[in-house]
Length: 199
Image (cartoon, rainbow, N blue to C red; front, side, top):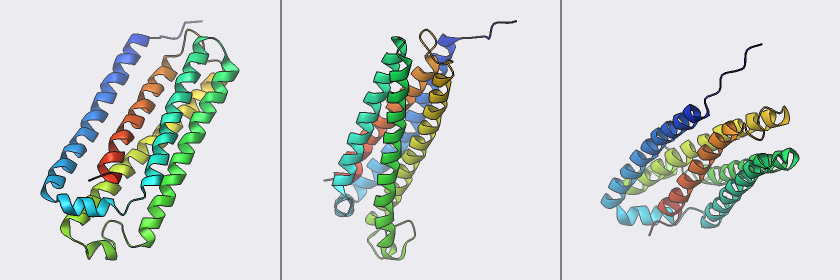
């Protein structure tokens, strides 16, 4: 019976290269936001005041907590505490669900008020506000898709953990997902001040 091929170093390098492309993607969007904001500072400020800062801060706390539970889960794996690792990983996934549900409530409130791309109420506003909300839905929507992808990968990791495939000495899969999840967290930390606290 042949031993399955493993290349932990290659897997880590591959993940860092992937994360670099993700940073380029969001970095480009951040530059676009900065350019438009410099052109419409007052309109961006006025539009940001319509967003729910409490929900934005709450979501930030949820994601920070999820990064913490994921880090604790990896530490538990490295100590051979599989049961604890599974519980912490499940908590991370649950926090991801909380984030998306909260974001869904926020978006639905905006949609009810006609504030969505090409929405009737939005199109009545100044060009800078239209740009602000266009960027808001694009960037938070793209971030939400990344959260969903991360939750899917975390669910796969939880299954592998339960089957004994992720364990002490063989945790690179969970490590890489952890890096991805932390990047998703960091991106939101940038989105919070850009959209919710734009002054």
